[in-house]
Image (cartoon, rainbow, N blue to C red):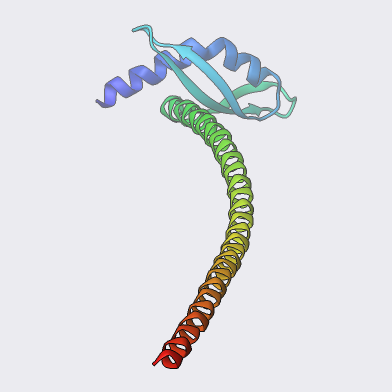
Length: 171
């Protein structure tokens, strides 16, 4: 496994040497530079490269300290995270729209309920007034009928008294 790692590092260095030469010849340290390299099997790997040129007293580049950090898996994980985040934002927006629709429906139904409640209260008042009028009408009918009965009874009693007087006078 040790030789394979060394062979991979040599292959990686050889593959990226032109890019690295450009970075090093700039004579400035380069930090966190992204480098995408195709591997022999067709796969691609993403690296973060840091370079520090090693110069002599005449500022001639004599070498470089170079570090490679393979961030391929991290980059894939970030892509998946961005995709999941995008899906989540889309789902949240959908939920916001649904919530807004539901809130509008609740407000509409609450308004309808308030209107029906007002109508019901008005109907209850009307019913109470109608019941009161009916009670008064029935009371008036009973009063008038009772008055008629009493008048008829008084007449009948008067006639009976008159008959009784006549019969007592005849005897």
